[in-house]
Length: 556
Image 1 (cartoon, rainbow, N blue to C red):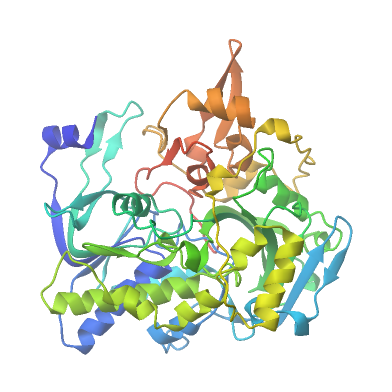
Image 2 (cartoon, rainbow, N blue to C red; image 1 turned 120 degrees about the vertical axis):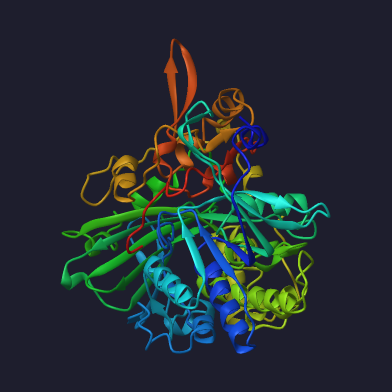
């Protein structure tokens, strides 16, 4: 049944009105909520703010490395240390390695550009930091609703965003209401900020509706895959940050790995693979498992225990691919817009800063009795901020690295080390990631080693430790615009790339009665959004499942 039909039979919906509605309880959304309350209080102004979060709790869907630059948090909550923020491990050492299949070559620290240095930064669990930010927001009077995904945007008769509608619950697999059915709720706002993270499904709709990307380069994404390990004490070096480039990825495939040592013998290890890769047989998940077998990497993990797994797309196009961030009635903030600095492999500080800038603009507008118009002060203050200068200096990083490891390394070194990021030229990305896949006939299948269950693992055991869960009797949130395309195009031309790029075993091609069919195991989904990004015909559309579904990341 359509939304309109459900409303006709079961309506009207309940509704609530707020001054500011925020979609997404990550660093950007919570920073916006905290800042809005702070600014309003400083002006003795009352403002009502709510945050909708699709995860079962704040932090449940937060996945990042993460090494955080505290610059934005220092502005938002200068006394974060005395407030008990879970930020304890300062970076003590940086290592950058180029890997071949058997060797590693360290880059001397004096040769590293500043964007690769982490002095003054901290290694954190971003999920835990986000939970703490949620507590700080609630203490200021912000209403937070975990387990309530925003599924629809409400528009005013004038065409402005007027709020959002949360998802209905109790729909069965056939898309019909069950005995437990309940309509979603309407959240009306004078302004609505969208902070859904990378490839937000409502943010994607807004970009299309208002043509926000008309003057931008095509957006570029990466898939980040991460495991959290408890290692032997002799293998743990608190504060150590290790980044690598090269093997196991081919030189024409953008990507790299990370190891962050923090806490009580914990090591966060992961890989980022640019989704502009060309070989349809490439499996980012299995490239990551293979990475851990490198003779200079595996000793860290021998005798240790993997305790968590997750995957998430990152929006990596930077300033060149940044869309317009405002539209009538709201704004895009954080990775929903694409403020991540790929050169630094950092986005949390940008998410917090843009949440603050958007909140400043919204509170000022509400104080002037405005609603539903353009928050022009938000992009204006961004262009005068330190964040804009940071992103401007590294704007060519992703386009250069997409041209290959060797050329990219030389040009990034020239721009960042020799010229300090002050370059008179801009390199542009011309193609979206889904346009970059070659037909399978142009490549050979990649033979990956079988997992051993102690250092390397398969997808299903990995999904298990992501704590992913979805109510089984609900419609699939992974939808196909055309049911025939997976076999007729993807399988026959591209060898079924879904089965390779998905890090959770969601997509399988099976033969039944002599016919190849695509099976979608939606319950495995960890909400990484890769399928929505990389599908060559953009036939796969990721939607929000029932509230609370998906991974449940503890200390990721």
